[in-house]
Image (cartoon, rainbow, N blue to C red; front, side, top):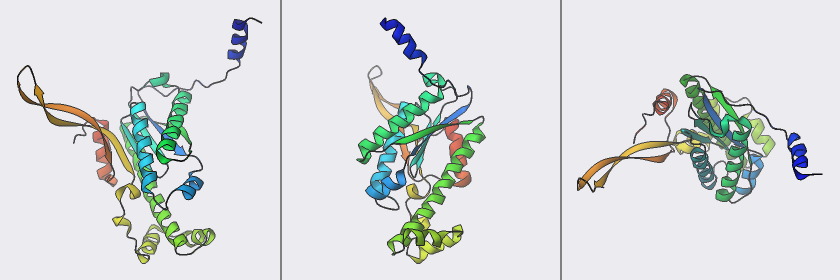
Length: 253
């Protein structure tokens, strides 16, 4: 059999989806760590570990740069990367986007975290600026919920309770009940680092610095761009205003 004939037969048997992101629509790529509960319990401090956090920030930066994104937000074992409206990398093919994003996230985390790990990925589409703001406020709300639950659970575990006892003790308890529980064990939720409570944002900002103009033979102001890692994000409406400025390209140092 001729190679060209064999190649055509084999390629005809390849199967892939051709779903594409919608044009003129905001896209968010979200990656999540797979089986990270077991991975983190075996390799990192609980409820939060600075080394794990640093690895997730490294993954966020890599995704933001590789995908030419506008904003990356990370909390717990997930990262959301906002892409520009006009973004058409890979022809907008969803299958290609999620495979590249999950593969990159897995390799970067494994390198920085020091343990083999892998992520899955999905794409979220938002038709309006308001949709995008609501999306990231939703993820930040999840960060606060996960932070409170994690701190409560591991506080009880370290106090001697079993997995079953700690889970049962938190079942059905309100936000205030859980915050009180932490306070009784000497932990104040509001005093925890921002990256533990409400996640971390990463985005490109413009800033001014002095430079030397050889033609004019004098110092001048020049505008530069850099990635900023923000571990103390605002909350509520203030966060919504920050996101709207980001979408409008008006965030500066």
